[in-house]
Amino acid sequence: MSTFQLEQTYSNFINGEWVKAASGKTDASINPANRNEVVGHVPASGVEDLNQAVAAAKAAAKSWRKLTGAERGNFLFQAANVLERRANEVAEAMTREMGKTFPEAKGETMRGVAILRYYAGEGMRKTGDVIPSTDSEALMFTTRVPLGVVGVIAPWNFPVAIPIWKAAPALIYGNTVVLKPAQETAVTAAKVLECFEEAGFPAGVLNLVCGKGSVIGSAMAEHPDVNGITFTGSNEVGKRVGAAVLSRGAKYQLEMGGKNPVIIAADADLDLAVEGTISGGLKSTGQKCTATSRVIIERKVYDAFKEKLLAKVEEIRLGDGMSGESWMGPCASEGQLNTVLSYIQKGQDEGAILLAGGNRPDSPELAEGFYVQPTVFEGVESHMSIAREEIFGPVLALMPVDSIEEAIELANDSDYGLSAAIYTQNVGSMLSFIRDMDAGLVRINAETAGVELQAPFGGMKMSSSHSREQGQAAIEFFTAIKTVFVKS
Image (cartoon, rainbow, N blue to C red):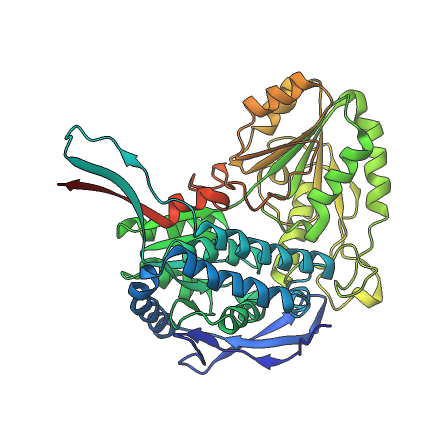
């Protein structure tokens, strides 16, 4: 059973202690399923608080990096065990704070557990190679060293998985961390940090500072003692973060938006394709960077696919994520709701045809939440805003084509290149898609959303800074190679 309690006041976690913001100010975290419910109060921190956290992380870095990988891994294993034991509590905090259904939140929390255990094991892997020297009396090899202090700027849509898949590799490779969560999900972040505290992490190794991105995120990007920044969020903010970090010669990693296509071939299993399109596009209220947005369908099966899709969309039940009957929760905030509604209106203004949804639900029991109906458009042209810009909501755009070649060309007609999927039984179509699709993640007969934690994750074009997160690829960002030459 969960032990989560509403309306508690949370603090920053700096140098192993829970401390209030220097200003004493807090922000209320609101339940998007019920705007009248305060989930908790979180610090509205300033630059002074960030400076304290960075100083603590810098002071802890020397002793933390001296531990063996196995010793650091033991701390991660302990954190995984605590998070697993408290999974219901953390998942409830997530559901109440950002709206996704409890089963999704519980699944994400357990993914956090798995990520911690995976990277705990990474502490036992090799960190370099022996390289032949031209000098017969010398030994030459490489090793890897941590960056130092890593700043983690995390979004609200995956408030457990994303901070952990950034912090865990940073920690196992010997870095110390300052986490700035999205203010909308800072209660969930505090719950996660409680797990690390309970696991016995040394003071200063992992710190939490809550506050506005324009204040804390900007100051973190500019801080001279932050040696690397890993960021997930919007393209607009990501570009500013990258520019600030680059200007002082530190390292940055940006994972940003997507406008992810799914291609439905004429030979596709339509029931499977509909299931994947709905799951990929509408689960978590479409608030995933890998969510399906454009549905590109061969004309031979367009009408059949559309009919099946609309029938399934009609069955979707909106409601509070804590209710077992709800399939889709609210948008995470009123601002996000207004953004989605504005794109729906823009789609209609630009000539797209609304097939389903398009409004807030009229049910009185949903009136106090930030709900929007799952929405489907057709008649969408590639120049329209709903075909080009990331909406981050439950909106699907249907786009017919005459061939797989045209489908891939249309799928690539985007500034983004995060994920893409195709449903087909034809091996040739699969191979063409794998070869020609400009996306960092391509999936065959599976939805666009989701990636396994042991696999590299990242996008092409405007979707990322071209580095990769997760799996063994994470070592490339969180460490630097040092070449060693030893002369006898």
